[in-house]
Every structure is written in C-alpha cells, then in structure tokens.
Image (cartoon, rainbow, N blue to C red; front, side, top):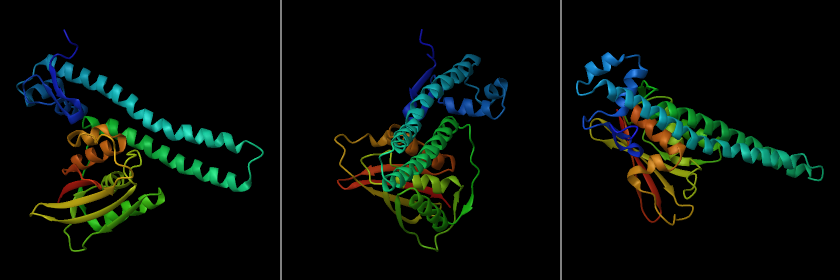
Length: 267
C-alpha cells in the first residue's frame, strides 16, 4: 500500500486532490492552519473522512520538506560566491582596485542571498495557503515604479508605460515584488534581467499587465509553459503564488525573441 494512496493529482500544478472528492490538499491544510478542527473540516467538506485529513496533512509535511530542500539549494548559491570572493580578499598580492571590485561583488551577492532566503520563506508559507494576503486598492503606476526602483538596486532594468488613468487594482506590498521577480529574476538564466511592462483595461473587472523579457540565449529545450512557474526556480514560483493569493492570475507565453508573462489583476 502506498503511503498516501488517497492523494492524487499533480503537485507541480498545485492540483493535489483527496481521492475523487474534488477537494484539494491545500484546502484541508489551509483550514487546519487557520485553527479549524478536524471536525470543522469534515463538516465543511462532507465528502471527506478522518483518514483523508490525516493523509492530507502527512502529504503536505512530506512535500514541504522536499520542497524546502530543493529551494534551499538556490539560497545557498550566493553564500558560496561570497565565500569565494572573501577568500580572494585575504590574499596580500591583490590591488586596491580588485579589493573594491570584489567587495562590491560580496555586497551584491549578500543582497541576492537575502532575497533568496526571503523567497524560500515565502515559498514555504505560500505552498499550502499558510500565508493569507489581504489586499487593498493600489495605483498600478506606483506599484510598477516601486518594482522599477527595486530592480535598479539589484542590477536589473524595468521599463514601463502605465497610463495614469487606469483604475486602482487589488494588491498588496507583494505585488511590486511579484513584478520584480517576473521581470528581472536572474535564476532564469536564459532570460535577460530586463523587462518592459505595459498595462491596459481588460473588461470591467481586470487590468491586464504584460511583462516582456528577451532571451539572453535561446534555451535548447523550452520548459513546459503550463508548469513554468513551479519548475523554473523559487522566484517565479513565489511571484505566481503571490499573484494567485491576491486573486489574480499569471500565464507564460514564448516566441522566437523571448517570453511574455501576462497577469490579470482585479480592479
């Protein structure tokens, strides 16, 4: 007997169901994390049994441990680079110019490391809905400007053309971070850390935001677009989950020049 024989679906898509009930592991784990009892969960989801709840929680713990190990690998890379440059700085024969350059690299990688550990923390919390994100009306023009300034400090570039008369969107402090990650995350090696962002009204309820990034080099094998945000590193996973938690959606498309991420955000 498999350890989690009642769990079905594709964890990479976030569609992990309990048997054939149509109820996801995420729904159960989120309810428990909010303080609901097993009895509350069974009342809210009449198709479930006690063993379903037990297996959902066990599956989530195993999956979180595995995800944390994978994501921590990304977060360790900047530390390895810092240690390398720090070792060079201890050598007496290097000149002042090299010391300044290497010290700058250490500072840059320290920022990257802080971002990576922040992404790791967010990814773990967001994976099963442990971290609810309240939203409020925000001017998209100001959000994009925040993302642009953050990108500039990290060596990335965001150009934007956002009309001031667009209505406010439902967002949070995480919205600018999501735009930053989609537009400049350097862990996607085949994309340049440069983005062009445009936005327009999409019906009565949404604003469509397009983030265009050019290829640094065309990948030999293009990743599957339907699972791109969960197979391309911590940054894009966090960006996608932040957007979903705020009630929006994000998809990825590709052509011969690069990739475009399309967000729909509620007004």
